[in-house]
Image (cartoon, rainbow, N blue to C red; front, side):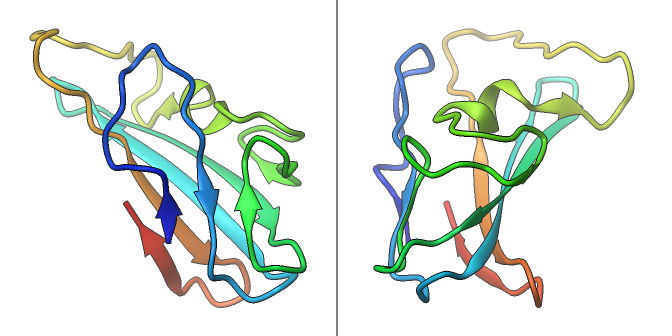
Length: 115
């Protein structure tokens, strides 16, 4: 399960936490957004759940991926376009920007959670 809620304000700190995982499980987190031109932006990071089966991005370090270390907002700021040299385009600033998250088992690629 990916926490907290499914919506938040764009300029506020987001706390991302996973729970219900097996202890000490390697998990790849991916973020994805598609801008108003259809350009896809993605980031990923590798984490290991703690002894209680949780990953909290405010305290858990990324071990590999688009960034390393403790970066609570890393899955946002590290997003890069799949099309080189593209900039994020938002035509209607009143409409929400959706960022999708996936948690995948590093060993098998199995989808563990999404939101």
